[in-house]
Amino acid sequence: MESRVELLGIVVGQTKPHQFHFLAKRAISMGEYVTVDSPTGRILGLTEDSTTRSDLLDKMNDFRTASEARKVAMKNTRDKSYNASVKVVGLLDQLRRGRVVLPSLPPEPGSEVFEARGEEIGEIFDRKEKQWAPIGSLLRNDDVRVSVNMDKVASRHLAILSVTGSGKSNLLALIVKQVALLQGTMVVFDYHGEYSELEIGGVVHAEAKINPRFVTADQLADLCDVRENADVQRTVLVKAFTEEVKASPKFWDSLLQGVRNVGVSEKGYSRVASRVEDIVQIAIKRMKAVVDPDVGDVLDQIKASKVNILNMLEFTERQANAAITYYLEEILDDRKRAMRSRGEETKVRFRTPIICAIEEAHAFIPADQQSDTAYIASKVAREGRKFGMSLIVVSQRPRRVSQDVLSQMGSFAIMKLTNPEDQTHVTEASEAISEDLLQNLPSLNTGEAVLIGEWVNIPAVVKLDHVVEKKTGADISATSLWAAQHAMNQVARESTKGFMDTE
Image (cartoon, rainbow, N blue to C red; front, side, top):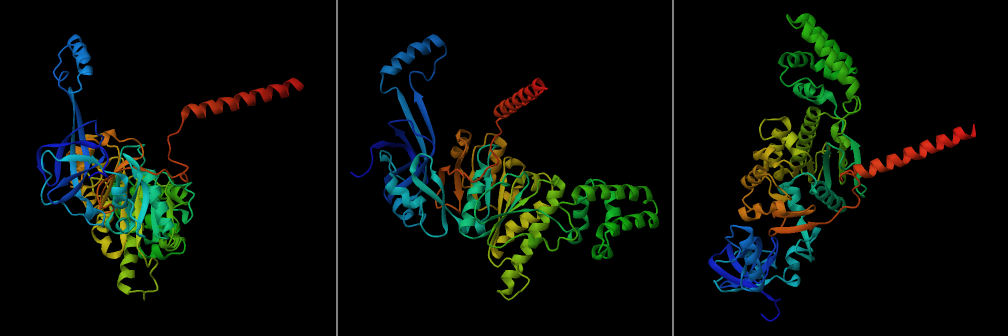
């Protein structure tokens, strides 16, 4: 007892094995860890909520009365009360051995509550086994480093959720950095070019490409930007997309000829076929950088034992949806062959587990409609663990991400969330986050996150490390850029004036 830090408070009210409240000597922050004795051993708890109350100022109805009460309250040391709500995360001695064991009995009312010392909890959060990778420090105790289990990231799926600008891409870059250090295989579908300048060893950058010979007719229609509800146009393309066209050395010429043939041979399709031909010709010009019938196997673009950043800036949303679907299907099929062949199959590309990260998940795995990416993502979420393939989904709009996919995420990194619908959607996807903790998510700052699920032993409120190698993704300073441009314009004008004066 004498080795503990100063007393924080006293347990009050009704206690439960998983939760208790205490009255504190000072204001308590969300994310502080505390210890308290129980009949079954010392407990470690996480503060999820706290309140500060003044008896004198509690029911003031006018300014003058409140002003007078304030003066009295300032002199009365017993006026303010600090109440904290604590989630029990486990028995301290078991947690230090790497096991999560909840107490069978709650702490007694009147028990003393202490701040958890760094030396007590350091080994719980900063694991040294090879599968654990450091990504930050405890938010309320920056002396304690926090590591995550990369084996769980590579097998149990992860969701990174927050509002824009809270540090989602920095966290994904942290994971990329750790996978690269471990010489693992990872694919990041970079729809907005967030990672185009990521300068980390073991990271390779490539332009996402698709061979149209190997996609489905519907995917080809998406790639050509044929509207989803343009049923007749899509029918013409389906009829034209024959096996002969797929095998033709001159794919695009053959496809266009096939469209014309449909217009001639199929009654009533003449005008529509002409329109489809125009759409395909426009698509050929616009897409030649990303859709290439001579590119070969799509998996040739992905290097094993590297982190592969696939740039998708040139894709429209519909095209990106088709591309991500295609890559995920091919990777899953390859991992199935790898697991079933037991190392004997020569066509296997990835003989070790692979992680696939989808940025802007709300666009590709929507909650309100069935997309091709949503279908294959759900399949990977269900089956991927058996075959060594995992997903990381990243979104600033959790409520718009498919609940079917989110509910299969084994781990979560939840950052600042202010929208109540987003918060509700997250709680429906994971029972690990409580109502108290949920209500405090808006108070998180940039780079701060709640980590829950299988990639951490116990919930952790963390200040994430900053990835200095990530050059893009930060907010643009318009005022600085305007000032720099103005200065350049001034220099240009003065140079021109000096030249004219010498004439």
